[in-house]
Length: 67
Image (cartoon, rainbow, N blue to C red):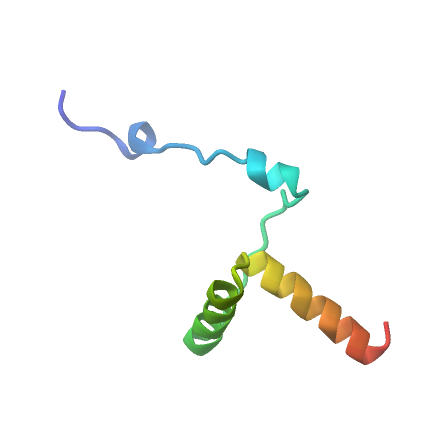
């Protein structure tokens, strides 16, 4: 027939690029719309992925705290 179910229409994302960077663990959290916009603006301006912005933020935090 002409209709597809959700399962039939679903296409699995190719995760090879994630595995190449050793980023295979999903990380989800809730943020404010302002935070979301700010982190996306930073990522776009710097040509980074969101995860790379977060990784840099954690490194900066650790450095500031003396870890």
